[in-house]
Amino acid sequence: MSLVYHSHKRTRAQESTNAIERMYITMRHLFIRGFYKPMGVSGETLREALLTLRPEIYGSVSEDKIELQGLLYVIDRLPNGIEECRYINLTSDEGYKNSHFEAIIPSKRRRNCYRIDAEQMNIEVTRGRSEIYDILTHLTFLFIESHKIMKQVLINEKGSVIRDWIKLEAAVANIDKLTQKEKEIALTHTANFLGRTFEEVNAVYSKFATDKNPHRFLNIIYHLGKLAIAEAVNNDKRIITFSPVLRERLGHHIHGERWARNIKGVMAGHGLLQRPLHIISANMHSVMNTLFAQHALGKQHKKKSEMELFEALSNTGNGALRNKVQKLALDNGMIYIADESGTNINVQVFDGAKFPAEVIKNLTGNTVGEKNEAPVLVVMDYAFGEQAYETMDELLKPYRDAHDQKQMMNVHSVSIMGKAGILEGGKGDVMIPSAHVFEGTADNYPFENELKKADFEKDDLNICEGTMITVLGTSLQNRDLLRFFHKSTWNVIGLEMEGAHYQKAIQAAAEIRGSINKDVKVRYAYYASDNPLETGSTLASGGLGTSGVKPTYKITQKLLKQILG
View 1 (cartoon, rainbow, N blue to C red):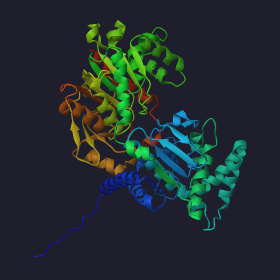
View 2 (view 1 turned 60 degrees about the vertical axis):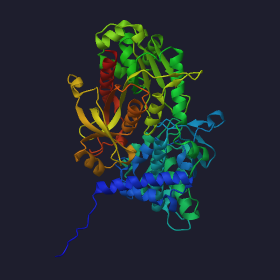
View 3 (view 1 turned 135 degrees about the vertical axis):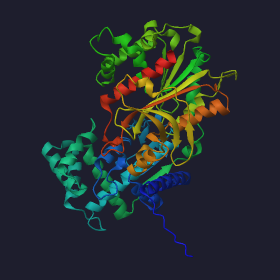
C-alpha cells in the first residue's frame, strides 16, 4: 500500500499572515537591539516581508514604477524634511519641547518631531508599540521607493547619472525661483524616471505642496534619490536608532498613568468622581456639537436642518461658529483638559447637572433629573492602537488622592466611536460590532453591545452587524487577507486598530480587578472610512469629507440618547 503525500500550497492570505507576523517579530527584535540599517542586511527581513505582503495602501510598491498615492499617504504621516535625513532617531518624551528645537508635527499624525541638524530627525514616540510599528512600516516603504528611484537614474558604480536626474537636480537648486514653465520641464524629466505620465505626476504635485514649499514634491523625490545614490555609491547607509530611554520606558504605561491621574484629579477637584460616569472615546467635536450646537446656533440658522448645521460646523472655514458652540459648552458644564502627558489625547468632561433643560429635552424628550445623579461624560480623543489599552486601563483604575485615599470610579458605561475599514458596504456606512478579534491570534472578545442595528432603522444609513478585527496596523492589510477574514466563519465586517485593546481593559477592570461595576454597559459603533476590498478605495484614496458627517453625528446622538435617557 502506498501513501500519497500532497504538498500544501500556501494561499496568498496565508503568505500575507506570515509576512505580517515576520514584520512584527523583526520590528520588536530591532527595537531591542537599538538600531538598524533599513536598506542593509538588518533591514532585509522587513523589506522582503513588505514586498511579499504588498499592502493595498502602498499600491505598486513591488513594481518598478514609483507609487505616488502611497508616497503621499506616508509623507503626510511623517515629519516634513524626513526625506533629507540619513539618521532617524526614535525617542521618548525627553525634554526637547523645552529646547530651541521647533516641534514638527505631521499633518495626519499627532506626534512631535525635531530636526536636530541637516542629517538627523528625532521622532517622539509616546503612544506605545503601535506607533513604532506605524513609523517603521512607513519608513520601510519610503526607503524601498528611494532605491527604486536610484536604480532608474544611476548609470554605473562610479555615480554617473542620467540626464533626467541632472535636470531635476538643477531645478531643486533653484527651487525658490521656479517659474511655471521651469516647473513643468522639471516634472517632465521627473515623470520619465518615476515611470509615470506627466499627467499623473502633475495631478499629485499640489497635494504634496505646503504653504512654505509649493514645490515640495520635487524636493522629496530629489532627496529620496540622492540619499539612495549615496548608499549605493559611497555605502553611506541610512540608520534608524531607538534611544535608551525609549527602550527602557516602552510598555510601562508612563504616559497613560500620568494622563489618567491628571483627568481624575481635575474631576475630583470638581466633585465629579462619585457621580455616574460615562466614558466616550470619540473626536473632540461631535459630542459637544450634538449637545450644544442647536442651542447656540439654532436661532441664527433657522433654515438649516440639524445635519446641515453639523456640516457647517465641520467646514474648516467656520471657526467663528465652532467658537460660539464651544463657549456655550464651557459656560454650561464642559471642562476641557488639554493633554500634557505626551499621550496626545485631549479630554472633555461634561457635567450633566449644568446642562440647560432644553439640551436634555432635545436629545431624549426627558426633563433633568436629580443633580447629584446627573451623568458626567468623559470624552477622550482617539487613542492609537495598543495605546487604547494603556489609557483605558489607567483611566478605570481607582483614584488615589493626596492623602492616598482610594476612590473607586463610578463607571456606568464605556462607549467607543471611531472610523474603520468596512468589508461589506462603502464609505459612510455604519458597523455595529458584537465581538472584537485580535489579528494574528485567536484572542476574541465577545460582548453585549447596547447599540443595535434597530436603533438606526429610521436614519437612512446602511448598517452592518458582526465581528470587527483589531489589526496590528491598518497600513499592512491586503485584499487577499481581508477577503479571507470576510468569507471565513469569523463573520468579520470591518477592521480597526483599537477595539480589542479597549475591550481587554474594560473586561479586566470589571471581571478581574473589580475596579468598576461588573454590569458596566459597553457601546461600540464605527463609521466606514473606506472599503479596502474595493479597487481604489483604500485609506490612501482620501478622507470622508462631508459623507462622514451624517454617520458620525447619528452614532453620537444614539450614544447620548441612551446615556442621558
